[in-house]
Amino acid sequence: MLVIRFLRVGKKNQPFFRIVVTDKKKPPRGGRFLEILGFFNPLTKEKKLKKERVKYWLSVGAQPSPRVHNLLIEEKIITGGKIAVHKKAKKGKEEEKKETKETSKKEEKAKETKEETKEEKKEEVKEEPKKEENPNT
Image 1 (cartoon, rainbow, N blue to C red):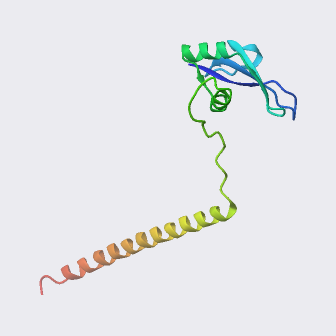
Image 2 (cartoon, helix red, strand yellow; image 1 turned 90 degrees about the horizontal axis):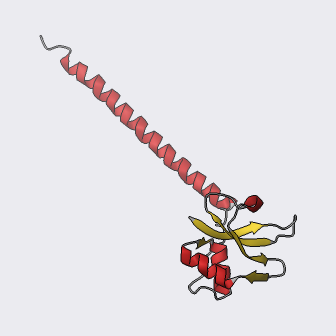
């Protein structure tokens, strides 16, 4: 499956991306992509796309990555809604503590119920032999 995605070219702390067409399973490093469709500089917000070629690759079946999809919508090459590309926020320390407390309480309750069932079984086993002890008298 073909994908339209970013290839980072910039230096350290100076991101610069080429927009390339490549196979989804292979990384586009070292020139292993099919075609360069444009570039995007996130620091200056400068972008340039080959609209004709982008439309061609989309018609052939190439899927844009979520960020490239949003970029194509901004440039009005495709229509539709944007895709949320933000990473999910990590849980705060307070939420983690609450979750660990809840799970520990559940584990304690489960242990208590197991112990109670074991004790009940032991009592039943002890009671049964007492009834059978003096059947002759």
